[in-house]
Length: 472
Image 1: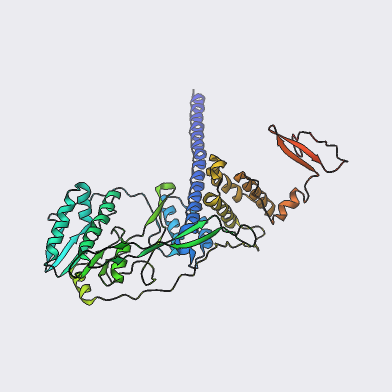
Image 2: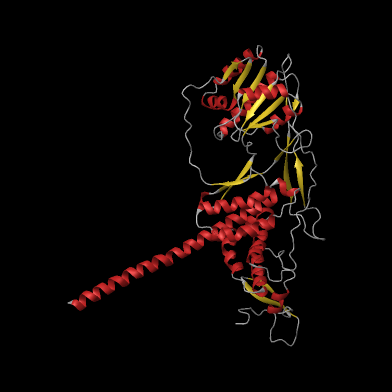
């Protein structure tokens, strides 16, 4: 009986150990899958910034180095916060607060104050307009717009100045942002006594993939393009009153308007805390991390870049706005013209016969992003293209020497399913495979590889032979 109890106890222990081991083995693939997925996300962010962030067209930024330093940190990441921090460390080399990674943030309910001030009111002779809150009110009831505009037109005749409070408590919805822009244009049109040219935007444009070295197609190019600036036509029959804007990091995007009014001396801008984010493109990553990337930049009338407030304070008040109007200071601007790189020349790293793992992944990420953004027949590759990165990251990591690496690159090139793809300078792989092609020509007929021409009469091969295997 004791023996039976011992045996039962022993079997139970084995069962528990078996379950624990199976659980551990089951977790390993999921952890590895998470690591690969994070590297895939890193590759996509790096490539999107490389070809579309405006700074990389004219600033000296070692974007390769930023990736090389990020790869080991992504591999070591254990939590979504680790991953997000690593992405932000890479993006930090851009020195652009509008390009950053954020975790998924749950919607926050803004609790109104006990006594909300009127959205259009007069204080000490100054007309104060709460623009974002007006946009939110109009989004709920479009008939309210006429009432706000009428109140402003009536009050402005007896106001010594206008203060437009554009501070937000969070990002406006798409419809709220539309009503904000519409309201601002209507309001400013009635205040301005002349037409004002607004600030323009600048963004990167690619016509195909610019050739890296001599030769190739010369008609492919990249450029930094300035959009034609818009205008606001003033219809006021009286002189434009002094106008001050108060903005913060949650203000809606209307930097072009502010820039135009600043450049003509029609308004001053007071910034509370951090600046508003520029227009951004969102990239979804694993772990619910989202990268918001700048896709354009503001160009002021004097050639300076980005909105440059007249005053920056920690906490803005109406008195700050009135003081700024009285002082009417003009900030010093950086007007150094951009030296545009029309071709993005990648560093060849010719000294690396067998690159370390980070540089091998750099090669993979380069190749994938070029085809993903510029290959004209990507849709013909099929669904397999989206699996290239997760399939090849382990292959590039596993390379043991230059032959391994070059053979993996050869295999990678075949993923584009295009005979125009090829490989150069892969001498180690060529020596492994043989420096010369076999003295036969083959074709693909009726789903089979068939010999179409024999170049050496001494071979025991004839035209029409079907190639079933090579070296076994």
